[in-house]
Amino acid sequence: MEDYRTFEDLECWQQCRKIRKRVESFCKSLPKEEKFRLVDQMIRCARSSTANIAEGDGRYHYKENIQFCRMSRGSLFELIDHFICCVDNDLITDSEYKSSRQEIESD
Image (cartoon, rainbow, N blue to C red; front, top):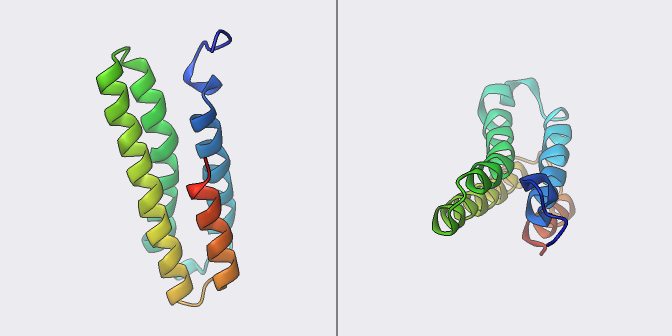
């Protein structure tokens, strides 16, 4: 970790950023009637995952940082539930859901 300078150097933040970008792109394909329902919730979760890691890093205290990382993980699990809603409402295939879930649960 000698190259670590900011939260942007953290692998967990980088992975959450990839997920956030994928979610934001995916949400553009959802029907307009989902704009203020599912789309809004999914984008908030995805953005929360990176924002909490950044905020925790800025706290400069190990225990506080851990708490913010836990909130980030919670946002990612909430995102999994939103993808399940997409499957249940025939907005994505089961295969697309599994791919999204796998990305979220990856190391």
